[in-house]
Image (cartoon, rainbow, N blue to C red; front, side, top):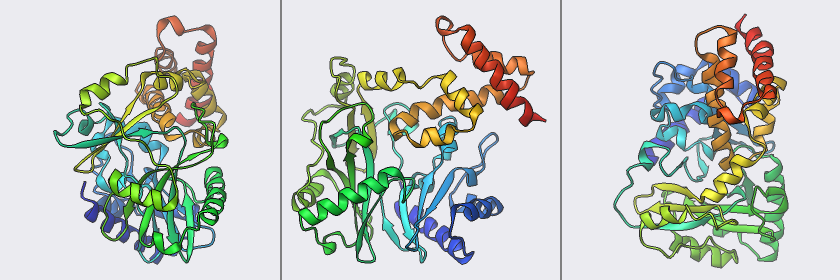
Length: 376
C-alpha cells in the first residue's frame, strides 16, 4: 500500500470539501454526487462496467464541535466490491475511520481495510516474510487521537455513535485514573478494542475496558509493531492483545478449524511489510452465521426500510457476512427477467432443505413491494 500517495489524495479531497463549505453529511452527499468524476480521479477508482459510482462508496462524518471530518467506506462498498477487488484502491481502503481537520492535516490514522484469509487476492497468496499474530478480540474498534488539547475517541463510522459516546466516557475515566498526559499522544493514534457489555457481540469477556491492538504516527505514517505498541500500553497501563506463540501460518490456519475453541474470535496476522490478514475460528464464524442473520431477515429489513439502521448496530465482523448476503440479493433482483424470475432467484439463495413456504412468501412480497415499484 502506498500510504503517502493515498493520504495526499485524501488531503486534496478534504480541501475540496472545505473550500465548498461542506459541513454536514447531507451536503456532502449532494456535493460528492456532483463531483464524482473528480472524486474518481483522487480515489484512483477504475469504474469498470457494473461497478457502483465512487461517490456511493465513501461516507463522511463531521464533528459537531470541532473542524474534523472522518471518512469511512459505505455499506455499498461492502455489498459489492468483493465482486470487484480492484475497487478497493489504496485511497478507499484508508477510509476506515481516518480523520482530518479542514486544513487537510491528518489527525487520526487507523488500520486500513484488511481482509480475511482467502477472501481477497492479496490474502490468498501470502508473502514469505516474518509475521506476528495477535489475538483478535470481539468488541468494537476505538480510535483515540489528540486534537485541540483534548483526547477524542471515535468509531470508524461516526463521531457520535452509541459506541463513541460510551468510549469517550470510558476514555475520560481511564485517562484521569492513570494520569494520561496529552503530550504522550502528540501526533499519534491509539487503536483499542472496546470491551463492555454494550459492545458485546458473541463472546463474553466478563470485564470492561480498553485493550491496545494497534497504533500509528500521523507524521511518519509508521504502523507500530507489537514491540513498540507494548511500550505505549505499559505507559498507559493498558492491557495489550496477546501474541500467538506459533511459528507457521499453516499451523495457524489449522488451529482455526478447532471447533472446541468456543470463546475466541481468532487472530490478526501482521507481516513485516505491514500487510494484515484476519484468521477466524470456524466456531466463531458459525456463531455469526447461526445468529438471526438470514436472507428472510435481510429481505424484511430492506422492505421495511430499516436495513441501514439494523446494519449500523452490527460489528464489522458480522457486517462482512451480512454485506455479502446483501450483495447476492442485489445481484438476484438486478439481473434481467420478469418479477417471477427475480423472486425465484431470491428463493434459490438458500439450500433446498431450508426453503419453506414462509421464505417463498417473503421473496414474493419483497419483489412485489420493493422491486416492482422501483422498476417503474
